[in-house]
Image (cartoon, rainbow, N blue to C red; front, top):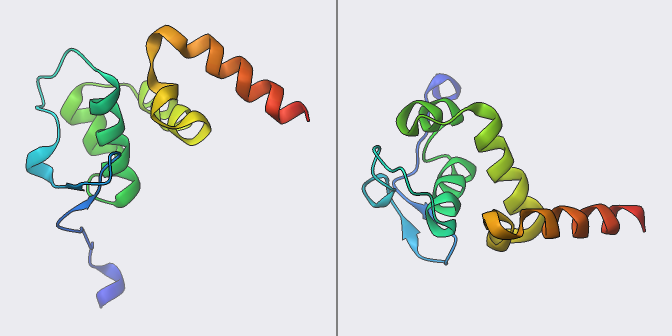
Length: 99
């Protein structure tokens, strides 16, 4: 029953185009989340390296916080993860949706 087995790739392509493995992900005790680290975690989930539940448990994130990271990457790429420019990218996205 292959469909019941979980397939987990050995590596995925990271946000900068490099291979990304479980060992290369940020440490579980990470407290300072820079753009690159957030993008790596989002890429790991999108590529199937980790599940959302595993990420939330491993890093102590809420589901809403991680979903916000995913939304920011989908809308604006890595730049959307910058805390200092959140409002700018949110406004830009909303303007694009109107037209």
